[in-house]
Image (cartoon, rainbow, N blue to C red; front, side):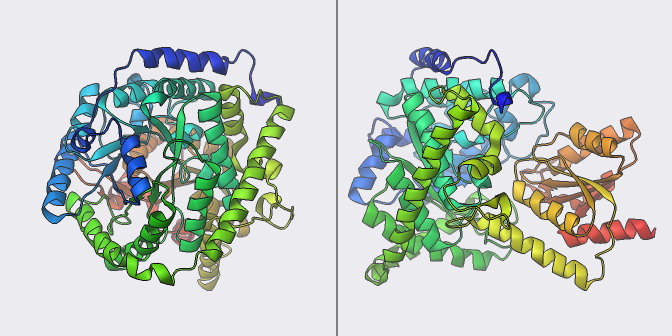
Length: 580
């Protein structure tokens, strides 16, 4: 494990101090929201609402340009004044290239959503309307953390994240030490603003916490992040939670367990994200999912007063980026559900939830303590934030669970651990694998890939889609060369070349597929490399002249890429090539 901490790595305490020194030079802006509410910062407002049992409401939005984002914020604020359906805050989703140094912007795949190219762009968004923006994706966690945090603070942000994204590999960025140092320096900036109730936030459905198999591991890992941010760096910490959780009792139990283990003198639960794993292309059924969550969530917050904002998922989320009108619509539905929530309060029994809550808090704390005791045995200075973050990033979620999970060991289970409460993404992935195999066998395609070498990889951090593809292919007798997540186009081509295989399977999300595909196939032509490329996942993107992401499968076909809806489609595509 000596490779965890390279020689000459910067000292974490010195990096934190560098950040603090930078923080002293930053004058905090004041948002339109804080001026209207007459509060010093959003953290103060959320604490005040929590004490009163008042629900705050949050949306998420990443449109194609800053102009569109500003116009939508203004629209939704005015709509709220007319209807009485007020939206308090908005998670801002910029382009992934925001996480890179400016000189790398043109090299990385463009994806969807807008770029925040200057402080003025931040100011325009945060002053657009009295809806408080939180700047999460590609800020704290990215190779450009210091630049992005500085701009967000000067514009008037109160919550800045998303820390868990420090485990991501950003396009064409290969220096994990420099990335971690940048993250710790940005946390140091935030530490200097602790007295102003400025808060570093993370999200358990992004980066490393999304890759655990046990909810207890997630709780323990989040406790580790708080230890790094709060105890080692001196900044306030909060967590957003819930997008990858559909089971309502489990979701509430995790929410309350997080609240228990993160107790502090500031708001520690930033938001509860609506269910994103059960949504479908049928908008009407998605409204039912929203309603089913809102009622128990409103009751939970009013009873336990955690300060969590409720972040709603528009009904069109599965199909495309929702419009401002569609965002308004889901809040209208939720507020009707909220008015009826009180009717159900006496019917709800929290005893089952609280049993899970206690189990998760207890086992989560054990996982955290096991990591804290175990890292020094691997040569890690547990008091150094740079060393802790870097070592955890390099170990990864699977190894952390293998080494430090507090449960029983079972060699028949993945990672040889017996989860206390399995995460739903793991269960869903196993079910998808089983369903795919059943379909493949029923269509007599099981022998199609036997003995074939197939290179697989993901353009981004979505690990479990890659798991489904790899496990199905391996079950069918293919020789899978798995390049893992966050692969650049050059890397997947090199992987195939080294393995001497023409078959390349790519999993993709985040609107990257078209730009990534163009670059990939351009490289194929330059190299004169003979390959058959298959791509699946979310095959959407913004085309020239458009402002909203659309399905780009036809354009991928024009490039010479075979789009696949699922693994069975992939097998059929390979079978067709073999027959030809």
